[in-house]
Image (tube, rainbow, N blue to C red; front, side, top):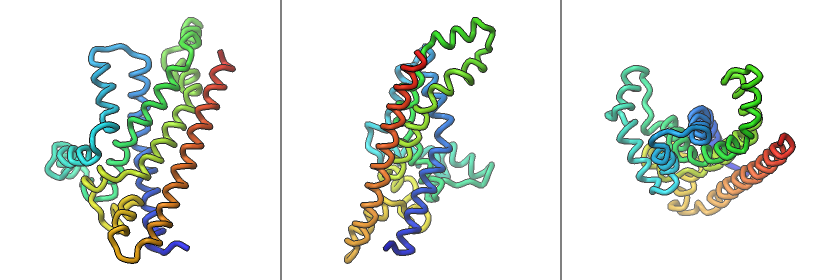
Amino acid sequence: MLSPAEWEVIGLSLRVSLVAMAAALPLAYALAWLLARRRFPGKVLLDALVHLPLVIPPVVTGWLLLLVFGRNGPLGGLLDRALGLSLAFHWTGAALAAGVMALPLMVRAMRLSIEAVDRRLVAAARTLGASRWRAFRTITLPLSLPGILAGLVLGFARSVGEFGATITFAANIPGETRTLPLAIYTLLQTPGGEAAVARLALIAVLLSLAALMASEWLVRRASGKQAHVV
């Protein structure tokens, strides 16, 4: 049986992850489409920057977020003055950190899905008079939808497990930024917290396992759909 404090941690983790996915989705799909369909100077650099959070220490990502989105940072100060929105040390900051760390996985899944869409279908629609937007809306977007969903599921799982960037940028504040990994970290240092650690760790594993299984199912469905269309 979970305690009210543990339910609060789970609820906050889900809220942070869902907001992170909602905020990251448009950017992730735009980047995926750009990398899949366009050739431009600096494409290799953009590709590397998108995937950078996968290879640098998450603490470094959190520190960079603090420099940019902190109250004295260029974007953080602007948001604070214009909208009264402060990200550092708030749950919204935890969502930003989770979204940044999940972005590479989302872009990768969506990019593969867009690349799998047969360009001949788009070209045929264009020759029949469809505009670029209509060809995108009626062909590319529907056929890449399983990849979008797979990216969202993978990103959600990554967000739920995010630790390093979150604790650096948003800190470990109970009821505000203490998500599942941070709560487990805190309980590991608390005498008698082993049972709660086991419960929260089990929930984290189950969430991640469900996300991976859902992602694999979506990828298989996308592959079958592409084969059927071609």
